[in-house]
Amino acid sequence: ETGVTQTPRHLVMGMTNKKSLKCEQHLGHNAMYWYKQSAKKPLELMFVYNFKEQTENNSVPSRFSPECPNSSHLFLHLHTLQPEDSALYLCASSQDPGLSYNEQFFGPGTRLTVL
Amino acid sequence: AQSVAQPEDQVNVAEGNPLTVKCTYSVSGNPYLFWYVQYPNRGLQFLLKYITGDNLVKGSYGFEAEFNKSQTSFHLKKPSALVSDSALYFCAVRDGSNYQLIWGAGTKLIIKP
Image 1: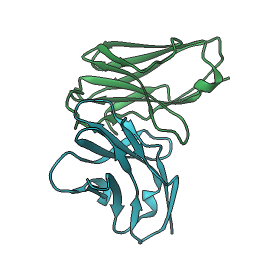
Image 2: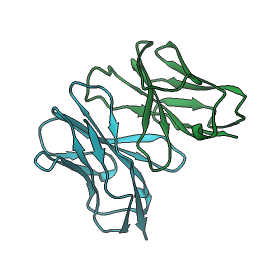
Image 3: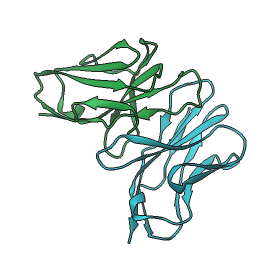
Image 4: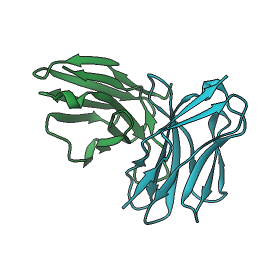
């Protein structure tokens, strides 16, 4: 295991539902990330948090709302999603993101299906 | 603009044969290059990285990668493939001025017994 956990592993929701994805890292890292993974496409970076502060928002629709209460926990709140939002959502963490050579550690992902 | 290309969607190799998964990149500064592997229903796992120094980098599970600055490539290699190496492989790059990783689309590696 990588030291990054995600719950739930699978989620099916309707377009009018509200749900949240949770990520927790046990590595003592400073930075946490949300990625969207769709088949045969590069990973899409959604949000970056560094020391609990959001440092990156890659033009993500407002129906995705991140929350980072501390350096170990990261949430992704979902509401009024669209079917095209169905994907694997990956959480990752790393030591100081300002150091470009630090690798990221990934959780197992949440497989999201929007009906 | 920074970019990563993995020209092959899928690579098929017989068990015991050497394997190569290709990656080329484009960055404005000095590159930091990474390989990750993703097994079915799992997240990505870090395999190896190039920062500076020796162009041949060794990583986990017997994998290695060769950095070629003139060809802007960072191909992943293994001398003898195992069936258990079958997975999705991602190349990623970052330059020193930007902490965002730029990812390739992934290459599916299939090792046949």
